[in-house]
Length: 626
Image (cartoon, rainbow, N blue to C red; front, side, top):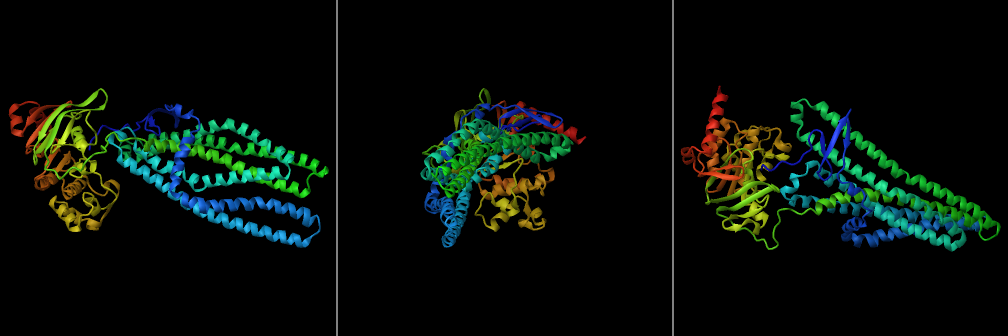
């Protein structure tokens, strides 16, 4: 189906993660980018995004709370117990020369470590399992939603910017769900436990040590916005690389045909270099949390040993308690460090979540009504009533189209490029909704019926037919997934595709790659005819369907087309006279308006617009023939 072209990146331009055009230049392979969504960069951390992500954990709470929760608490308690055991061993066993007590405490410590190892093993196992299920749910929801979006959505976005959300952005949330959330909870429990224990053992020493925590948060707080901006820029750079890469792969034949490989490589090098620089910058900012925590921890240790030595001399605490304090301080800064890293992880997750939810929140421009009903089996009467349509405001593609088609009629749509031929087809399939007017099938306004019941009764054969990865048989069966092998082969025989299929290495089981690169253009078109015939639609659309077929092949499928079109309402977009001259009615379009209607003989007799088109075609063919 021809639609208004998507705004794909052009040489000297690229696209951001949302598909917005961005100016780019290249100097010695270096790309320069100008941002249009700086407002995104300045938003405060949005906890609403995090809460929304947390809703994906809700179906698994029955597993998270009893299993992971128990293992988490057990692991935290055992870790908090060890310094107390060490303190008792120093003060009572070693200091008191009690070897038996020392042996008992060592055995207890080994038991505690064993319990801690078992608890952590179970926790890691279940968190990874549940995390992967959450990622599966999120990716499935995103992909399913994208499948429902209208053509308007894809018109303004490069394929790469869509792809990166389903792959990279969802993958970037994986660590958050598999480890991040649970580790954050463990660290919070551990920190609260340590603070309580420190203040309980000796309130003054505990207070003196943890007073450095606010200092650390004040200093690190200044870095948060800079880190968030840096990771957002990284996300955008990676989206641009994916968009450009997808475009380059799709257009590799054109690139090589025009020997633009070097320019393409230089342009990609600039994008790649810019991405590396931004990643290095974001990573350096991210790593700055570590030194801040180390310095703060060092200050805490200095306070501990200076003030602790004073308390030992005053006999307020024992050496064992001071060692326990040192252990707890070590255990205290470890989760603080992880929480700093976790914050950076949250920033990356939020940047990804913004892009993912941007798509999930996108509403189709073509929506089913809540009360939409099933379109019953149709006869094929089609009416266009006063149709006006604009792809963009102020630029009408159709201007007041009125057209009535009887069941079983064949309608040819002709006109210059941009006259509105494919737009009429787009509206009939309800890929778009008209700006004004309505389209009726058998008297049913197509906006009042479900999309599935409408499109299941409309078949389309395109000029550039899409062949999916898989076997020849699977590609034909795409028109009717429950078709038998006999039905598939019968459809292929009817359109004269059977002979060339049987000459392939494995016949109908021959594997074809994406877009059917092992097949010729004509062979791919024959498969699309077989696919449409197998689907048995009541309304059939041929959009330049024979444009890629040579004359000899076209002659062979003319009889097949008669079979394909028999008893169906058909809309044919074609320039070849042989395809349209036998149509029941020919609609001549120009700049979105109907200029002439009638059959071939009637229009030729008028010597109007259609006559001029045919004469121009004949002249071209004569000149081409020599």
